[in-house]
Length: 297
Image 1 (spheres, rainbow, N blue to C red):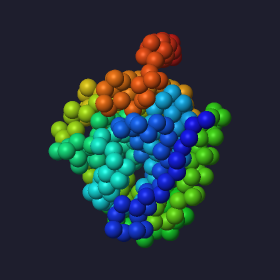
Image 2: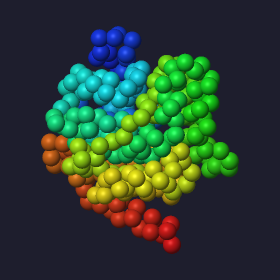
Image 3: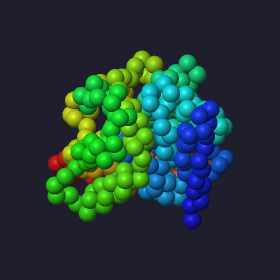
């Protein structure tokens, strides 16, 4: 049985800014993998990753952000959270907005690095791709139902396989749990004019994870990410939509393991050393490579 501890932590002077998180796996690990959700997500959207990865010996932390209205404010709050958790360096898995914020945080801390590596899932590097930078400053005025409508407009529609349909249902449910200020602030972070400065984070190991089917991310946005990180590992999923960590969790979890494998045996390992079985993972890696080749044929 995996033990996950749920916390609510305040690190800012403003005590309305509450970070909600689950911390699961061995506490002895000082460089865990932290998950940052998309606009519609809460800390529990990564429950499939918590269950699988902690079962294999990894320490995993999943987060839900407080209300922050600009990227600098978010980065400062996140740094304080890591200080509070006594974590010097971490691996970050960011989904969509979470991926953008992960890159901005790596950029923000580049002079005193706090990010050991990045896994960017359906992520983007420039908010202008959403063509909403001009409305970003008005989200705080909109009622919750309008904000939810904006987010739902990016969800897949039409015939879907059962796992993808279940994943969307789950995310709709999570979206319903968010208040007006939470949604407005996230949409503001998602759309206010900003981009990643790659020269500040070029030395960080990156895996870019994306899907080949319908998602909110345009082909241009994906190509921009590949250009930005020419040395990044690529983890392509044939299907998975906006939320592959929910509906294609086995593949996503395997790609996460492959990414973290490079840190095994170092002080930045996210796994309990006694749980490492590199041989077993190598076999899985080969089988994944074989299956993806077969899909392409």
